[in-house]
Length: 235
Image (cartoon, rainbow, N blue to C red; front, side, top):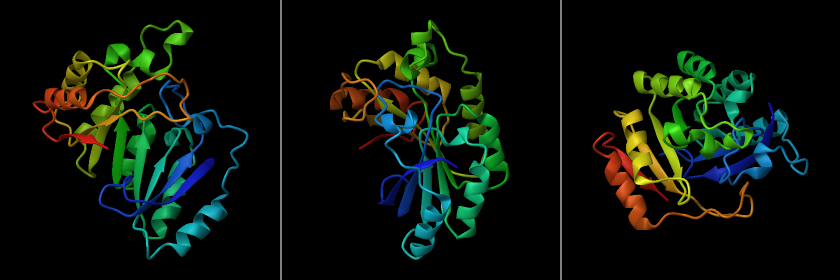
């Protein structure tokens, strides 16, 4: 398992839990506003953590932490993800998965085998703007095959085993009111939907993007609530 980072303690990444966050390397999207450039490109300056290092840390923190958040990059790209989670759960930890939804088979396996306790899935944009938002349009693709993402959306909407959320990072240059109306109709009835404002940083894949205004964020949330009552602004 390619683990390129570890946040020792977080109160934000796993709702209602004191957790640690593991960052896996590699991603099949190239969202231009992504702030984890080094992770998705697997920068050679980043030294992978061995599983021995990770589990030594988790053993020491068993009485301090209650959860482990696995994020990326895109964790479901790694076929040994279930094995890693089984070892984490054997230590008594709850596990939260962050995913872009492009591997619905892995998501179903984790749910069916009871390996995750919470899932956060990114909704990048309205379907017709996905290619632009995830960096695929540079290959001449105006549209992107969203069948895998749609399958993951439906998997989460139709299951009742674990709590979950959908979330969108909102970028002034990429999102509009019409986009959020389309998203809300797409994931209508979801357990929770969070809008989080883009935050600029030195690690952004493509510099030059901006956060929307607070007024825009509020108006987008208001548009979504008739379809997803539990819509909130995070951060």
